[in-house]
Image (cartoon, rainbow, N blue to C red; front, side):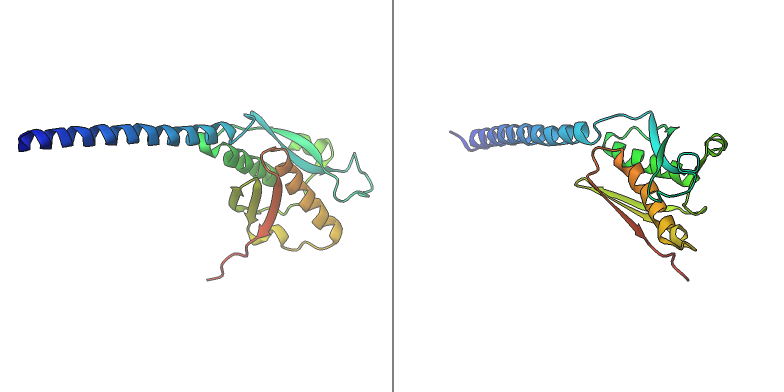
Amino acid sequence: MKRYQIAILSFAIGIFTATYFGIHYLGKINEVIGNFQETSVSVKYDTVQIFLSNKIQDPDSLYCGKTYPVERVVSRLSDNRKSYLGEYVYLAISELLKGPTIHDKENGYFSSINEGTKIQQIIIEDGVARVDFNQKLDEGVGGSCRVQAIHSQIIETLKQFPEIKDRFIHVIPDQVG
C-alpha cells in the first residue's frame, strides 16, 4: 500500500470511530436529559394552593399552626422543561406573599406574613427546597403563635409539590451599605 492510501484509510477509520462513539455518547446524554425532564415535575399545574389562616374556621385563634388552602391560577413564565418545579414553587410562594384577595378576606382568610416580604432565592436539590426571604419576613414578629402561623403558611404551600420531600426556610438579612 502506498502512503496516501494508508493515510486515507487511517482517516476513514478515525472518522468511523469518532462517529460511532459520538452517536453512542450523545444517545446516553439524551437519555439522561430526557429522564430528567420527564421526572422534574410529576404534575402540570394550572393552579397552585397557598395556605392562609382563617378567623371563621378558627375564631379564637386556638390553633396557631393551622392553615387553610386557597387556590390561585398561575401561568408559567417560560417553556423550559427543566425549570417547571422551580417556577411553580416561585409562583406559589409569590402568590402567598401577595396575601389574601378581597374575596379571601371576606371569607375570613388572613396572612401572618409581613407586607414587603420578598423572595431572595429558591434552591431545590434532591427533593429539598430552601427558600430565602429578605429580613422583612421576621421584622417585628413576636410571639410563638405568629411564628407558627408564618411557618405553617410557607411549609404547607411547599408541601403541595410531591417532588419536594423536605423544606427549609432561611432569612438572609438585607445588606447594609
